Length: 316
Length: 320
Image 1 (spheres, chains in turn yellow, blue):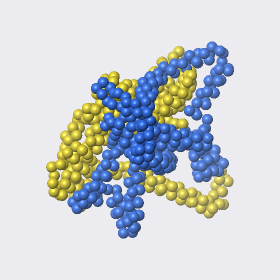
Image 2: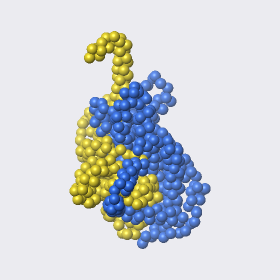
Image 3: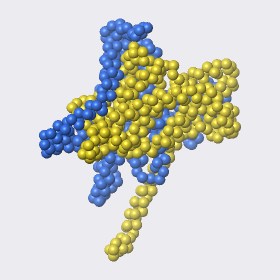
Image 4: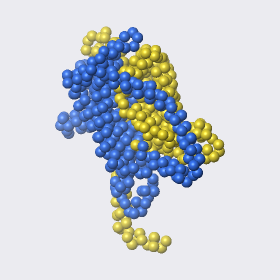
């Protein structure tokens, strides 16, 4: 105690300098970190905020040099128009149905398969897991054509059947990644759980359903979220397998053309500019309408998502 | 793959110490693993393996879509010859896509490592910062990601075509206006252009780095704090800690992210080759040539990944 009190007094100037130097470094690091984080956050949010501010603008606000971010003629009219223009109610319902179906199936199948790879040592496990990696590496373009033709031959096109069969068997695009994540998650669980369950008389299935599944909720939510979000923006597969099913992604993919169709009546330069302004507003508003459901889901799932990010130590 | 060590060791212990019947019990239990992976095995056989073989056959044929399915017209090596010898676009595209991949990998992996380092430390508002960083993963997927780009293209077109009327609008909404605003007058125009290109590039790269940041944060969390504690007691500085502990312990994740970024970049829709193959397939034409192109491309990816693995696998430190 005594020496501890003496020590600072003796080396006081030196210690103080050291301390201040340390403090300065710490301060600089904190400053740099803050600038970096705020900068990146700004870059991420800027286009979004931009679209939001645009979506509430009247057309005249766009040419008005005095209007920068906040609309002078604040109007929700764009949302109503865009909703009507892209048939929001119908495509939203369609997209939600398709995405929920696909992601529930994928979350279930990938969790089960990942559990199998993580907790059992069976013959050929390494080879089978190499097949999972292969699924991740093969470009979808290689298998898309035959898949399309096979589904066509089986008369499964134009329905949910292709999506169900791909999701249920965990070979839909990006399922390799999900199996990988699930396997990693289950591998982190202590072996003693299995042993304790076995002593209590639970078989491998019982152990899985009544013990493991409860703690696997974060990873299942994460897979669900990934898969939902990916399906939300996905158009290639939907277009090939269920071509007359209108989803949000499909509508947005073609929005340039459908907006161009509207404005063909114009003639003079001024009206061309006006139409382009209108197009921009419509595009921004429609994009926002497409993203809003995802944002709502993200707000709810974010907790699980971060949790499983923390717990998933993914090792190649 | 490398992390199986602990399990294998446990297995052996059971085998050597326990009586014979115990290991057969373990074996029986382990056999139920097949049941769990059955869905994948069925799916792989039906929807991956068979299509891959079909696609390989297609690449030597020309495909005609008829009422009931399709017919094959044998072409031998024509498709491959056509792509490699006759079609100049393919060679151009493949060079472009290699260039893009190298650029992406060199930017994305260091950036995401850096971002993960920062995000894994405690600080005020970390939850919000993380939520924002992961936002692109959620919001910018597939079609949604390309919308922003299309918009900026349109803006550029607009500023050219309907210059006078729409100029003010372009001014207030493009990111480059910010750069112009900040540095106008003090810097030459060529430098301004570079800066504004870089700023729009930053957004693109942040979007591409989402999953990689997640993987790195997961990896950083697996490093035991006791390592840092003991090295701090030995008097190591933060700088030394980083190079002696953090960096080597993240080796496997760096390798994983390299592989992931390479695959992601190679199979991205903005890749000229992929979009070309996709357009052929979507238009239900040139199936044979598209299949051949996809296979050449697939083999190219495989070779690149093989080289990356061969070079790095030995240098990566596995803590097992």
